[in-house]
Image 1 (cartoon, rainbow, N blue to C red):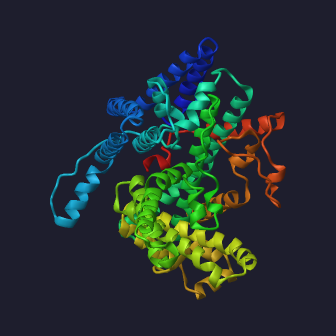
Image 2: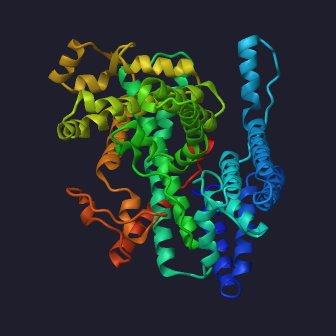
Amino acid sequence: MLFNSYGFIFGFLPVVLAGFYGLGARSREAALSWLIAASLLFYAWWRPFNVLLIAPSILINYGAARYLDALVPRNPGRARAVLAASIVFNVCFLGYLKYVAFGEQTLNDLFGAGLPLTQIILPLGISFITFQKIAFLVDVHAGRIDRFTFREYALFVLFFPQLIAGPIVHYREVMPQFKSATCRFDPEDFSVGLSLFFFGLAKKLILADPLGPIIAPLYDHAAAGVPQSLANAWIAALGFTVQIYFDFSGYCDMALGIARLFGVKLPANFNSPLQARSIIEFWSRWHISLTRFLTAYIYMPMSLGVLRRRAASGIRARDAKLATFFAALAIPIMVTMLVSGLWHGAGYTFVLWGGMHGLMLCINHAWRQIRPGVWPDTASYERFMAPAGLLLTFLSVVFAMVLFRSPTVEGACMLWKGMAGGYGATMPEAVLSGLGSLGDMLVWLGVHPAWTSGSMLVEASLRISVLLFVTFECPNTLELLSAYEPALGIKPVKTPGRWLNRLTWQPTIRWAFGLACVALAGILSLGEPHEFLYWRF
């Protein structure tokens, strides 16, 4: 079931809310049990068999967590073995469902094994659910969770607003909220939640979706070996970047809003990442919960392990700076980002995309270490990097997004070549002739007329320009609603010189009217339901 569907907006969500508030007036326990049942229904709606796949995994993980909870104080060594076995089970479970076909394809490509490809219909949200269960087990082993019931565990894992595409939450972030929740109607939670939901719906349906029919053919043609001109290649690259930006941003807002309707604040997962001035900052704003998970459970253990081993052998970091940089920072970053790429999708393009971001992160970290010696004037450096860092980071992300979206590596290379002008620059003949002397100058510079309609070029350029303006100049929804903590830890921040200072959400008639217009525009745009792009990854 999609958030952006008639069935969810006018059927499922109102019924679940009514049952939750109604039961909550009599019994908190009944209201929370209702929420678990509703979450199972939500998960089973697309394919009921998914419940039969995920239920045994949930039961096994719950049993492992209970065993760990009792074992840690008595036998730490055995507890570590149980934790390792549990993590291996979860990784293998995810690996079989998501990566067995990719593994077979890789063996066929490398060794000509001729293995038949296993076709598995992937259960929705399996990556997010698996990571969340692993985080829970690690927290139990570390003593950060001491008492929990099966109902609490099931509610933590299955809570439907974050079930399909995150955020990846920790038990200690949401369960204290459920334990203290009244499970009754709260005007502030309801109004904030409804605002977040409809802002997200508008981002998805009005801003992101219309770019799909424009962008998809360009990537399909490139994958089929059709060269793309300079303009088409940049439309493909920029168009997909802003499309997935507003698609994922819209989903995150909707997830936050739905959870808030039940009185729960989820952690922020998306915070204007294209405004980042470095690739390090980008990953602190894009898919925040995934970055946090990979940093805590892959990067930090690898990095700290290297530092401990080097310290035990008497090697000090300052005595071997370059070796320490590679062993304790660069290699863990590359491994982490390769895992991130593979987590997003089972394919060569995703692995290469992760490696590309890993390399950019290593370069960024290396520059941070040598910059004081190369450019000691911090004030002048900051003045220069404010615009330069923003542009460089944006172009790097756009360049990598081509690989993320392309069906094949060859298609991505063809688009990159087109972006560099390798297939020449063309413009629809009608547009070129209508530019008069400017058109003549463009022809002199090497722009060739193409016998195609200019409507696609004009529409794509206008849509991309509008979305880039919204991205860089407008406050995001977390900023708009910051006075009401729309996500865990989000507090009001005044940014000098931005019109955000004058534009903040308030529970007033004016904002209610504006939200009604946004909601109406979103609902009228529903039409045929479309999958959220990020759900594929």
